[in-house]
Length: 216
Image 1 (cartoon, helix red, strand yellow):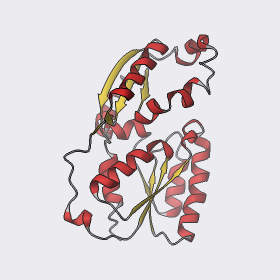
Image 2: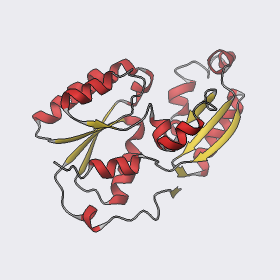
Image 3: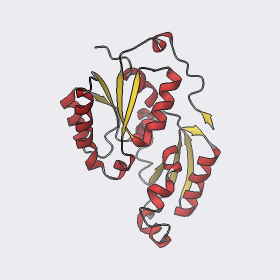
């Protein structure tokens, strides 16, 4: 597996000691947050995650984030960053962020910020019938799609769940042939055209770098 953060060097400022910053993130991007942290030398950045399954239950994100921020404040964290985009909360996550005076990832979802918001906005309309997969979703394809949707037992349901999609787009955070093979197999299984976009970690890099060095 080849990291797509190669060539991104930590600066002297980033190697300096900093006040602890807590990132409260979606479990779907935990590996990626830790990869960025290590490459940028953000030793003072700490991570806690809400369950990845909230991807399917966006109504649970805002209340869980509210409680988690309250807990973090009680533990003495002054600097907190929310490792979520809106992610289907319909603005409710923004209300929680405003209540606590914290920032979150920009954009509607991780599929946008992985590509970079500028790039995503340029192709969003064309991708209306695209089914996105990331490294995480390739690793968890069976656990997140096949078994919960019953596709392993009832493949005839594939048309019901995926009939409105035309293309599977694999947003690759790393160059990993095993993960790409999963994405290609998934496209064939679902009867979709296949496209791979090598995104790396997109806007996550800059967002975590900014969050790690709060100005106040």
